[in-house]
Image (tube, rainbow, N blue to C red; front, side, top):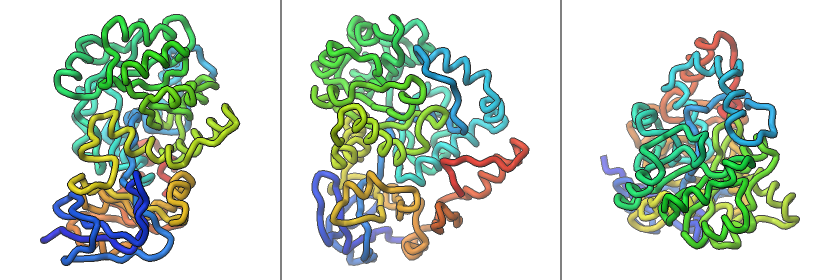
Length: 405
């Protein structure tokens, strides 16, 4: 079957620029052109905007469960981890298999418009599961858990992992200054001592960053991932995000896991915008927020040649959102789950409104119907069965609010 098709008569936010009444042609899983296809064309009229599919640059997929865990504020992440391991929620979560929980995380991301996610955990943990998921999980990275005596010793050590990242042109990913104790606050100094701060470095959380830290990060061209929901829940404080942005640092927004963060990337960006407004009494630009979940994480994870924006030759990862074409960026920032109209990965539809049935029908995938926030959707795989299996294992009619079927 020839898989070439186009979506036309739609507003497209690339997101670098906005194209009105435009078309995009997908062929062999990639963007062929911004024109109608001679093979198959689908006109999408009405209140829709097409974006690159979203990138969630920080999640812990194996932590995808609910309710949130913890009684903060904490001085660092470690006492929260003690609370996690002693909680009834943790015991209940572990009645599910690791594969079950990874599926929860994958679908949580998919129904919020995400096709690419970074799962911050050692390769020996997630390599067994990620190829079985409906979305793309970034495989090429090196990592450390963090840079303190509390470090969980992921990887082969900060210096070795960063050196490997530079040699192989990969991202080196680590939590940093996730707390206010003396050990946490020395995180940037530790990375400097290991010569592990560079444009390959991806730093997460940074709630203890000083002005000096921010200056060093900017000088080294390191990347930063902001997780405001998790930060505020655990510490009642978040990073100096305005100062980080003004220093010219490449900033992305990530969810962390639902154990501490917001339910999905859409909730996270809305929460981040509110937190920014509360902190600085000014508005964080909607256009910038969209870049923080598309182009910025693509740059941080060194995948910008393939993903993050809509350009000829890049992978055909698309997101259609129901909203106001005259306000495309605001429409995405304000979008709720019901507004996620179509999600496509490498040309194949994975999730979306039943009104796009003709597009789904042209692909030999197994789809099932689900209802999300009152809107009937198609989704790849059998999400209803996944939820039924979870409820059988935990022994009651458990609800997962990030999968509101």
